[in-house]
Image (cartoon, rainbow, N blue to C red; front, side):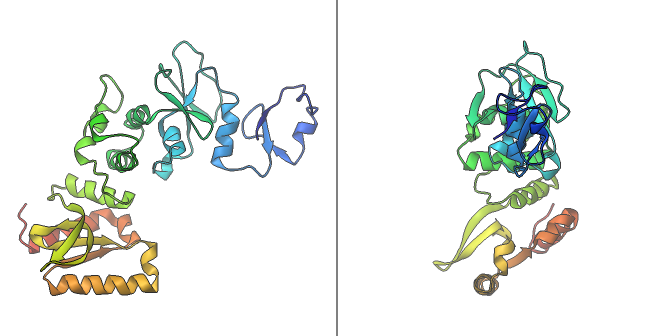
Length: 278
């Protein structure tokens, strides 16, 4: 566990002893075991130095809550302090100031903003597609309800937040699935049904990730578990059954999500071929 160090050391250690190789300094004035190098270890160290009433917030709170924030946001440590408290000066911390006494809870032993306040703060931190992905997870896990997604007046990122509620769907099973769905929406394509069962002549054929029943088009994302031999066999049987009943199945791999524009264009062409008119 991390511990505070002064120029006099600690009650048990001299200052020189706190500089030994078995300890490291995750943030100024704090020592921790040299083997404790995780992100959570850093937060526990920073927590020892926070002003009274301060809480982890924004993307940091979201990560503590186990939400899928974009990797590009992971380097920052966000802390919010009450308005009447002086902010700290640690370089490792991005500071914010607002009243948080009414929206604080303890998660993993750390003070964090509650789910709703975290969601509101994320409106100014991440783009709209990723915010929908986070919100899908929050609603699916019961951290928020769809009816909770009301944007308070005067918050940063309000326009971003207002776009989220109509697009949130807790049936979405993965971040990539949500990001694709949002991109399709932004391009003006018809909304697919999510994780819909495909039944023909009373027989269940499978469950499609994104499904357009009117156009008999189904899109499936093959994650890493689809590489297993038994899963590949099941996938082949399912997709053959789709084809026998007049469905077109487009299979996406992780690499295709790196070329989202091309993937959306391909889906658009398939929908047009199946009768959709923009």
